[in-house]
Length: 149
Image (cartoon, rainbow, N blue to C red; front, side, top):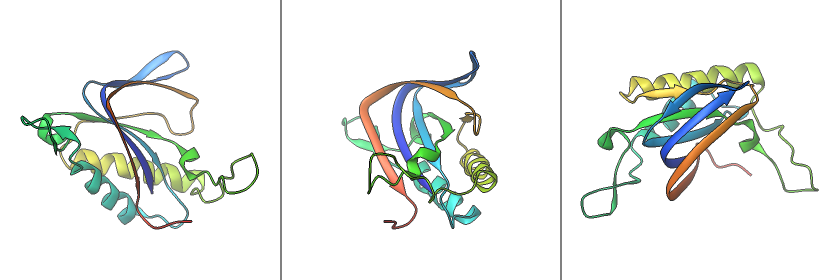
C-alpha cells in the first residue's frame, strides 16, 4: 500500500455537496492499495502510521504520534497514488489493485487504525470527492509498504 500522510489542523470530505466526514487536528491519509497487497500489508502500514512521530512535543520537536496528541485520522482512497509517470504525459495506473480488492483493503486499513484506538473518519471509495484541508506545518510524508519501481 501507498499512503500520503498530511498533518492537519482540520480536514473534510464532501460528496455531491454533502460533507460526509471531517476531523479537527490529526492526519489526513490518502491511501492506495497496490497489486499484490493484502490485509497484512494494510495492517502493517496502519501500525506504522499510528506510531509516526510528526506532532510537536513541549520542546517544539516532532516527537509525538497522532494518538499522543488526541488527534484523529481521515482516510481517503486515492488510487492515483499508483501513478506511473515514467513515460509520456499520461500516467498509468495498472499497478493499483483492482477496485474490489482496493476497496476491501482501504476499509481494512481504516478499521485497523480504529482498532489501534484512533478516531477514524473515511471518505467514500470510488466517489468524486472534494477534500479540504488545512495542512499544519506543512508536514507531508510519503510511505510505501514495499520497494516498488
